[in-house]
Image (cartoon, rainbow over all chains, first blue to last red; front, side):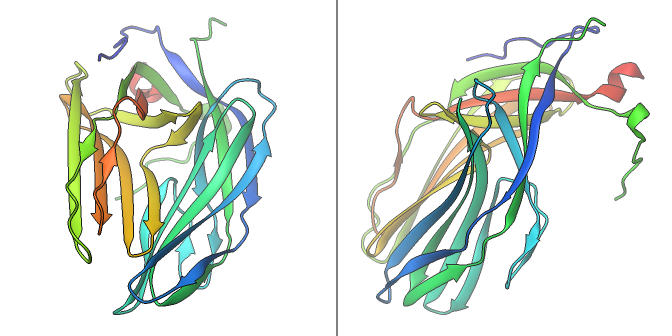
Length: 136
Length: 131
């Protein structure tokens, strides 16, 4: 376990933006459960990026839903709401990528009596690649 | 608290990578807390970065041929049990810390060894190098 290089002088590499995009995720309903039980759900928007390698991805959320105004840097995890003494929900949003697609996703964990519907929102994403120092 | 400058395109700044590394997040294993109870498990590993200041670090989790932003959270739920697994990265002027954490309700929680690998970049504002 080590850090490869702490470079000095002007010999730097960079993270460059290969692609930028945005997409709106669908709303998500997590199943109704009896009091004292959990349910969870995932909404994913899959987008082909065409790069031919797995890029690094950073993302931002840009929307307003019925409960919270968002303009967050991702990933973000929050206590989505405590709706009663016996109902609570957690929300996590993130982006990830492989060599074919970028995946924009959020997950809801719900505890309590009944179910929950979360309104979708828009995510802006940047696909990055490490590049060596430019010589020109 | 303020934003120093919103620069024009011709003055665009950026981040230089002054170091990078990969290592696995530490394993975590908790006992079963019993029905209706929570338990938390936490483990840290740290890596000396060799700088004399606290740098900016950007990290990703590599797992199953995918690259996830950090912090990365995984939820699991089944009946009256659940787990929330969180991977974090933070830094001070000496070390980069990788933190694995599991909050489990009604069941034991765990993070398997050699499963979630951190990829991190130590960044520096390009303007600081030019100054």
